[in-house]
Image (cartoon, rainbow, N blue to C red; front, top):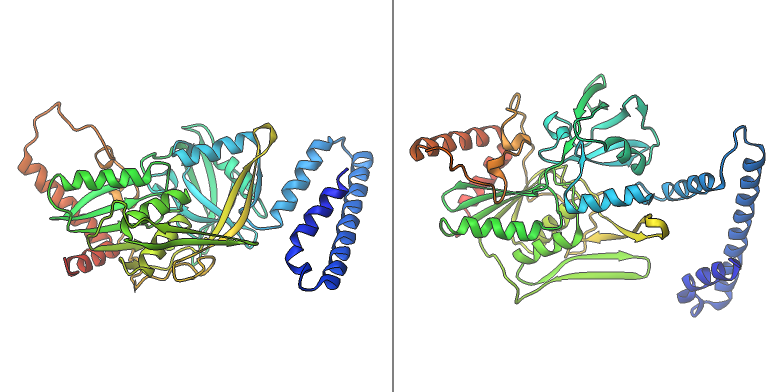
Length: 428
């Protein structure tokens, strides 16, 4: 029953070659089919032996699931089978409502590696950084562990503890870091007026409402006076939804290509809409090694269109496209199907985005736990937060306090200082 279907798939894949070199194509097709069926016969033999002779009785469903995970794991770190529970968690991630420690991870050279801690998460507050290696999760080794398994171990109920054994380049010994699982912040946009008419907007990830929340933050800023310039902060942004990244770039780029994807026999282009709502104020974009995927798409598009000056350090370089296909039984397949390219044709994969001005972050002692740039998002920083109406506040004293807080932030964040300096000297 399956042989004609497999034959059809192979033949269709070789159709373009067939017309230019029919004899060679037929030979290659025949060789590939023979190899394929030979491999399937080997698999069936092994499956039969495992079911008959393995020391413990094991169900065929367990074996098949292991085979599927092994097959996908051999492709790349981002392709995987998602169980119904894992598929549901992925959908929750996109909506911005999930509990865990707040880490975006990948697998590099067989090691579970941090892409970026999510701003405001337990991992961010405890100082876990991009490129840290997670050796163990609750004493369970992570060597050759796939992303699906790692994510399941990092997730859990709010208030539960999870211990990570973390190694860092330049540090002699690995450290055990105890994190308490929490509800990861749902607000992906944090906006602050950093100087008269100049605003700092941090995008922590690209979730379902990010583009609209960004517009709302600028509308609210505009109620106090004209927005004269913007620092768009994409540092430690692990990415998220492609369509939200495109929608946000569309607000900032007058026209032209935002990003393209290229896969096997397929190419897709995402263009800015010339007649759509646009923002034309001067911009500086902050990026670092924790800026990945969707964040790199926005940064690359703004850089190629010369719409903004990029400052910071080279981005992570996660430039592959994952397509999620629903399967029977509420499960899903996550498969890498293409690569991202910036408007000028640069591939983001592995190379990342190099800023126009490279400004390495300078450590400034121990960050205060209540400093927004060290990761903790306070209620007053959230979009649409309720204002304090239960007590009288001395506005002059409150303004002085905010000015002092801003000075402290700028003192501790040299990249932000550089961005503000450049923004202040851009033509208005």
